[in-house]
Image (cartoon, rainbow, N blue to C red; front, side, top):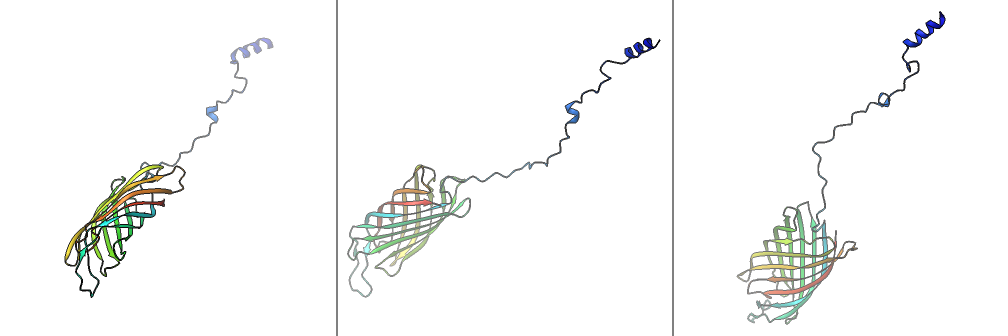
Length: 244
């Protein structure tokens, strides 16, 4: 009788239910916490411009020639003006360029040349430029102010102008640079002239440069009033610089 009851109970019990069933990993996995919502409108990270970087400083030697214009007598002299004789010119140049903002630049150019004409006068050209970089390109346009001074003339020539520049790249290799500014309405001794100040050339940036570069090019300063001299100065420029 007891044996029959045991068999009946064994038949009613489903095999495997007498033991603890294994727990599924999905049942023991922790409930993930909700992460903060990401910004759907992230601000792009500013990328440095390959043109000019934050700016540069360069200086060097200039060698060329000067022609045109007239030599005015010294104050108190009874001599009459005479044509300026063609002469050689040599001196130095400085170019300081800095980025004011992602699109605006400031530039100071200074040229100082010694002329081989009688008296070995000095002539200097100073330019202060403010330019706007076009759509992250190498081209910038803007306004400028110039001051021209000759050592044998008490008064200088000053005036505003406008033009454009081609910014050099700060990446390794050879890269062009250029600038062309025009200053109309410069007056001297009752005459007016339009100064054209242009320069162009190449910069070479070594692969392991540490910011340094070599620069070689040419410059032209031409168009002063006929009553002053020289009318134009053309030079070959070579020098060194460093990016900022």
